[in-house]
Image (tube, rainbow, N blue to C red; front, side, top):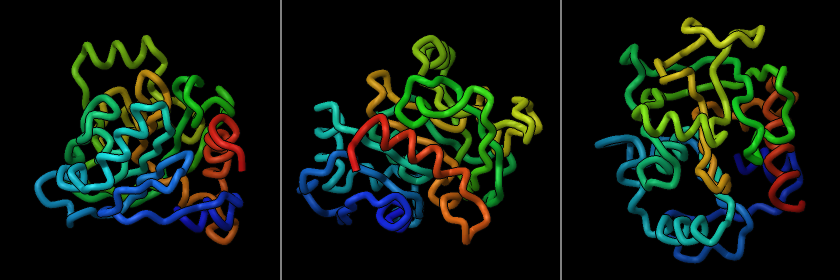
Length: 215
C-alpha cells in the first residue's frame, strides 16, 4: 500500500504505528490489509482497540477521510465506522485469487471517477470476507448510495457464481453515510503496478485522490 501511494501515485505518505496517538496531520488514514494480531478472535476485533484507532475515529468524526482494505475493512466494521460485518467465507476456506468488480454507487470518492460500465480485475486474499448486514441496513445502504462495489463476472454481470465468499448482494465494499469512511475487501494496491501485469487498481486510487486530497 505504501509503495502504491508513495511511488506509484506520488503521494506524500507517512507510516503510522498502531500504538501511535498522533496522526501527524494526514488528510487520509489508510488501514491496509494484513493479519492484525494473527486474526485471533475475529479479524480486526482486537486491532479495533489499538491506541491509534481512538485518533482514527476522531479523525473520521471530524470529516477526515479513512480508507480500509481487507483487514482494514474488517477493523472499520469492528469499530462501527462503516455498517455491517465481515464473516467467514461461505466455503470456510481462505481465498486468494483475482475477482472482477463493478461500481455500485458513484457517490463515494472511491467510485465517483469510475464508469458505470467499467469492470475492474482486483485480487482478493481473505478468510473472513463475507459481507453481512441486516435487511434494514442493506436497504439504507442501497437507498443512500453507500454500496461502492459488487463482485461480478468479467463482462460485468452480477451473478451468484461471481461471488467468491458469499457476501450478501455480492457486496465487495461500502462507505459510511457521510462518505468519508470507505472499506473494501479486494486489494486495489495489488493491481496498481505494470510489473504485476495489472493496473486496474490505479483507476480506483485516482478517483479516491481526485475527490479527496491534493497530491
